[in-house]
Image (cartoon, rainbow, N blue to C red; front, side):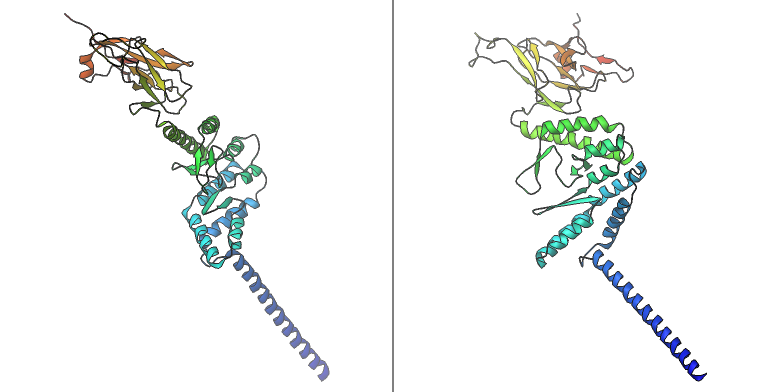
Length: 381
């Protein structure tokens, strides 16, 4: 009886000791797992925990998505990815990582953080530049084909702008920008930019929500890039007095200026009123695809951007051809239609007094759609 009791007590003690040991082992195991997680999530001592928790959350949700999620989920995750990739926090984070890597001579840590940004965000380390952008390819793989949003991502893959300050939304250069010898400097290729402007305009109306916002921003920035590029490239050939406007209605501005006829090198009483050849002027355009306007019986003048008088989406051009004598001159107003220049209204008489008094020759009638108001001069006795 005593032996049995002693054995039972020993068995209970052993069992308790075993349970205690198991609990300690489990505790150690949990600590080990916790330490592993901590090591993964804190590769850098200066890590922005809030930022990386957000990135981890986005990537975790993306990786667990069923194929072809709803447009609401897709749009939300894309917006969050754009916001993070465009943030100063992420930029500062990689600047700090770069400094740590140089100080420790260990660049593997940067690669680990680059991988941690995926699949939502792509990071390209180029020379002294850290370039962050949305991983468009991944969004294409989870997006339902033959939808408006699929068309959006297919086009955005070639590049897009995420803000009106010309901030690029991808880690790599857009297709319309060629990289220079500098690590992340590029120049806009005008013709390519025009092609992509038309592509974005073609899908713009079918986009909604944040995707529409990005489409609108990209169109706006492409127009700015094209105009800036045009100004820079043609600055030397465009006269200072050139007038800017969208004269062909393609949503891209161009310049127009007047080229006068040639005159005799030495002008005197004998050749006053003569030109070397015909006394004709031409209105020339910075866009080579727009044909010039020939002005007969003209020795000078300044083109005027009259705005969109006929609601066709293009600015009209007014010109008062100068001549040797007389204060009476006809005012001409042109519109570009079907790839040729036509009069908006028939040329009408004006007197120099009218111009000296600052009277507008023509303007849109806001009270009557499709009408203009003409201020002309006539002779009274």
